[in-house]
Image (cartoon, rainbow, N blue to C red; front, side, top):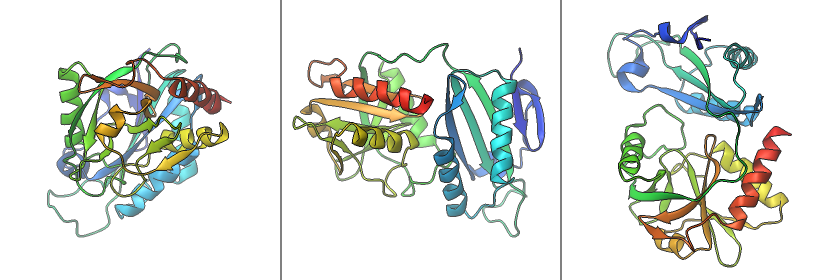
Length: 281
């Protein structure tokens, strides 16, 4: 079965899906996006994802291309048409088509693209710890907006790939960890506290991050939002990543230095299982 995409009001073959070369998303990266995880045919945290989409649109002074309820129907239909059981839905909204100019002189009609794909037959509840590397954080200062301006993230992810690592975690100018190139990072102290960076403009407040935080609280684990360094991460009991595609993924090493014995920690294992159960319930 060929994949189906939604592009500005039409459901078309994924291969034939296209936008104008004058779209400001193509020309300037002037747009925002969301990725919604599908597990066992269910959309995980759809409401919070759409809430964040609304916030990103507001911060970018962009209107909704369609009503929120209409977008929900489009997403649901794309999932059905592509028969996605375990996978991802990608929603992208750009400012629209205009003569190439840094500024825009009148309100534009936003462009909307929605795609979906299967990523795995089953979502394993237990996975091995992964290696990560550290890189300088070279992004702009509004990382809280989920924009399609992802060049620094892509370069960081490519460095991780070339190093044989799963992810690149970014280091701010003050030496503290911000987040991964496409994930949020956590550590577990020897006292059992879960530490993650505060949700300021310095990071993207991940939807999975928020759900894991709520799950951890329900599990009576103490969550502390504060900065931490790579050195503190290496001396921690555990570390892990969270994102819509990674769920809860334990970290075994940073820059080839082991965290603990380099295997998945007990807290990350419990959180992954509980998180998956939470989003499918």
